[in-house]
Length: 135
Figure 1 (cartoon, one colour):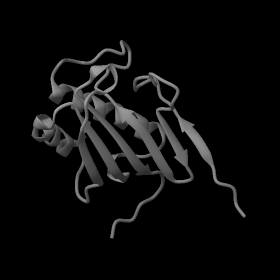
Figure 2: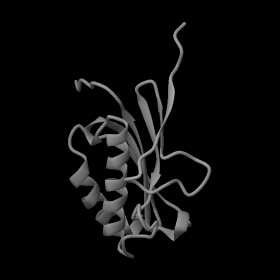
Figure 3: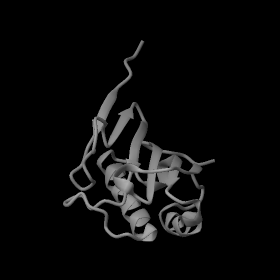
């Protein structure tokens, strides 16, 4: 029986974890990316109080993690979007659409009472590392 390979993915281009977790964990060819907030990696502060700016930075941070793992947005198969207010869904969706193209990943979106550091949006993902053939 072959061994399952587990590898922690980390990059200084994305914000450091703000708790006892990893930015991402790769198991064989599956990459699990922890929820990304709209934080500036160098200051660990939000880029602004705008949900649009926070969503864009959260996805940029995710892109850095994908790159560190040898993956990319076109290999993301599932995302979860957590919103402080569901009223921001349309704005976040517009930003999201600039990062993901068809075939789109599966997705869930939830409104929650609070997010870490009182953010407005957090996005996590599952992606594939390696060659992907879309059918």
